[in-house]
Length: 192
Image 1 (cartoon, rainbow, N blue to C red):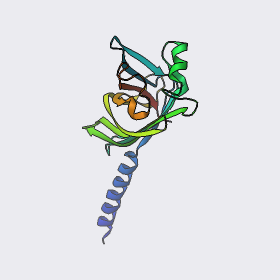
Image 2 (image 1 turned 45 degrees about the vertical axis):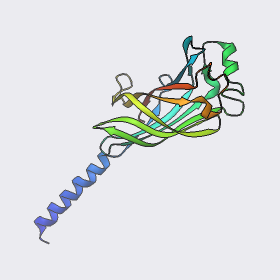
Image 3 (image 1 turned 60 degrees about the vertical axis):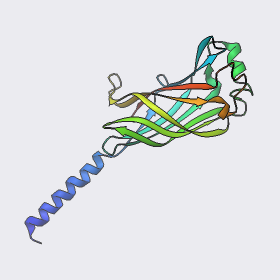
Image 4 (image 1 turned 60 degrees about the horizontal axis):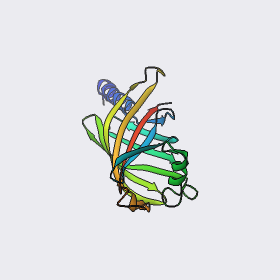
């Protein structure tokens, strides 16, 4: 191989190696002040009740070049906030969250589907009250860019899914209290 071909080959390999490094996935850690899981359900046919978990942690991995990602979320079920101290205790009891035995719920993704450059759905496994079921989150809103205050690479999303509480051994009072529960996740996460 002559010197010109060798130099050209090395240049191509250098560009390819640089592209691989540039396209490496980034892992983001959730911002505890801006990451929450909310849930809502019909109550006695009169209203839609909304509550949230105040302590949610997680990591997101995102590789826009490869159109891939992953999500790993952990929810402190004892941090449930219904707006009522009395009802917080009731929903933490054995008929519902049973936080004495199941203090943590998790969502771990198995795949992320993209439409162009943005994720549109996340399939994964939700573990709640010791039961694991497949759940698909629909990504409603998504952004990746520099955080204006932290000046770091950040990612944010809103996503939702519907689950059946009876499938997670929490069916007390169905059908008077709705079986369908809408989970909504708002997450902001920052790269190191």
